[in-house]
Amino acid sequence: MKLNKQKKFEALLHRHADMSNLLQVMMRADLRIFSGFLTLQFAFGGFISQFSLSEFGKIGLFIIDLALASTCYFILRNHNERRNEVVQTLKNCNEALGYNEPGVYIESKPLNSKTERRPWLKFYIISNIITVIGIGFILFFGNPKPKVDGNSMIKKALNIPMKPTQDTLNTTIIKEHILPTDTLTKKQ
Image (tube, rainbow, N blue to C red; front, side, top):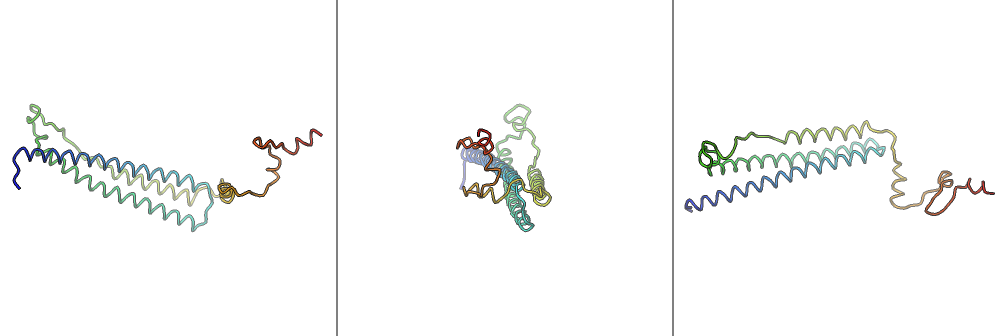
């Protein structure tokens, strides 16, 4: 298929716009994946610090965390490789459109400024590793005594009544207008 100059110019503009759009979408996707991963790590770390776990439970959760981190890494790595291809295509379009040649659009200057590659993948990987290490520390060296008794938390979530203790009998419950037992004995 032979294209005239006008059709070639339109094809270049279309390809340039398409690749620019793709690059923006990929950057947003990377940020969403990475921020989602960090959010999960913080939530996971906060959650597991509340409970005491068996050694097998700790190892199991750490394996799950490693699987999550490696999935995030492979997605970001593949996006990085694809992004490099997109950037190269954009550079080729810029070259074909004369954006890098001085004097084509601006007298004695190219339209595009010189660019440097600014890779982000290594920062994603470093943050990935740090959060996994942090989860490992919480799991294996964290709070040996749980702040929350797992059984009572589950019972509360399921609204299963617990056996009353002396503390619960002596407590004032404002909603139900129950007075402590010692207040009743003082009035008599």
